[in-house]
Image 1 (cartoon, each protein chain N blue to C red):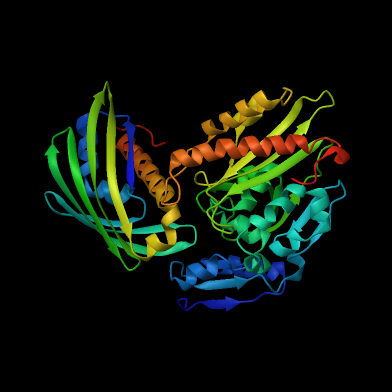
Image 2: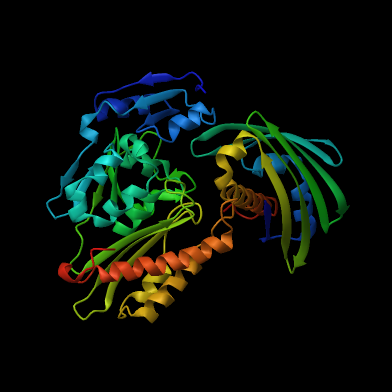
Length: 297
Length: 153
């Protein structure tokens, strides 16, 4: 299958790319092309102009931030995130989620920014960024604005990005002391779209009580969902089995999942409860000092 | 695929009834509708484009046939859509009940989607139809407010 005819630009700098986007309404940025190009080949999408970001080296790369967080250039390949020691050390949730994204061939080309800007409701990365409390950097010819991940995703394949803006970087804050995280998803086969997935980060106080719980679910609606009820059910309490079970049940109040040929809404709701419970258990276990953590998990 | 639910319009039943059957209102409020013409008392023809994220090219020719009309209480719709990227076919039952000065609409639709759009977008059909329904009902409600002389929301 071949796409409809389009004009193609390959700028060498972010400024040049932003100039092209501003000058040509209807121009579509091309990142890794793992969703856009198939849609074009099916002729389900027919942008008249593509602005290819693959010739802009400044948009890719993983760097440490002064406060201990990390910064991902939007064009960083998913494979490079998966294999980055910086990511493994400072954003273990992100490292844990990467192998669940499609297949290695796709991660070789696919980028972190492309996945976030595409905002597929079944995508892993949007939920991971919600759970991590990441900040997204949006750049236009007029300047830069920074949005919390929670304000970036606005619906089904919809984001706060203006057509003249590019998502240029993602900043992930340093993990707090006594924090832990876990990522889980269920799919029919590895690499398929998730039926339901969960990304969780938790922080406990010195007393052992839960300080902060961020549980983000995906493939349960129009976009990633950060569960407010889980936070209410956990924060201030000691996370014993009963409290975790109640928190996992509370997740169901925050979602209204769709039905399709792969799974009914009721099944997704049940799966969300089970996966949220398991993810929370794991995340709390990982808040304990390293040596006592079981490495078999 | 079955889509069902209720929606409350802030206006009297007779006004809501006429609103729902007005082709101009349908053209204005149905998401992606570019035209809607009442070709006979009970038959509407129009064009609708479905634009979700990267999918921008799916335009459908739509024919809606109204049956079993009980003014101003209930009607059924046969819906048929045909486009380069697939087809949709189905029926919907609509019932209006007066709740004081408001009107509650009860709807149940059984829709089938086929062709390329279903093959590629199967997992999204439920979310997309829910989103379009929500958009449509909300803009009809805004249109109702406008007709009743309330400030647009």
